Image (tube, rainbow, N blue to C red; front, top):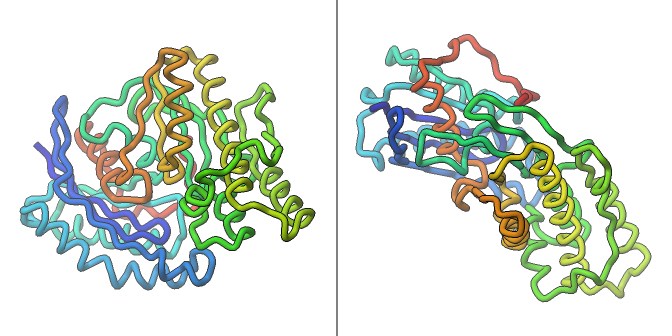
Length: 335
């Protein structure tokens, strides 16, 4: 049985989690603490790196203490320490990775650096120690990535965004509409009751043979619509039409990947997958094809340390570790 403490500080959420698990058995989240900075950055319309790193420094120690108290374990009982080492904001990554390395060094325990995207990728499977073969879609504020997964640590890139990520498009369109940051949840709320066919927005690259994504054209189409119909826009209709375009692109590309790979499972992860309309559309598409759908629970969709702990725990149980002099990688790719 292994206990692992992980820190996530890649952007504007400070998070600490403690997991327990052993090979072939269930994994258990003993503690998962998150300190959100959304309100702090909202007035700026986006994340300010200096503010984010400063608040990571202030919040991290209390969160570690809180996680240890909630888990009911002593820090000397922790078998390994982990932290996100990329991708993300350099100044934010440094806070979490340095703290985890310091604890590992002080206690003579292994350290594991974790790719933030791998944390998202594996989040639908937290609770077990097995990752079945599947097609995975990571869709968040900074990333839209389609992968073929053979198992933990064995990933093949199928496609990704060529410009804006889906979550980034949500945030930018939300800003155009005068909605608070972050735009994703606000657009979802605004779309309730709206007509998804009111505005004919483009489904960029949907019918192209490749599996890449593009959302910049959709974002620009919304801007031109607002300029053309200034004063005559019905917010629910525009929000619903934009949201439907994003959903059709994501579902369409993912189902195309399923057809090409022959896998019988799709897994969704990342903050955008909290969107109820997106989840419903994927469920319908998977049911129609007779394939299973795995989605991370809402608590594990946005940035959190439990997903980082899970990815690290699988590696730790496999006998892997990272060097203490390993640097952070702000632009670290997953594959």
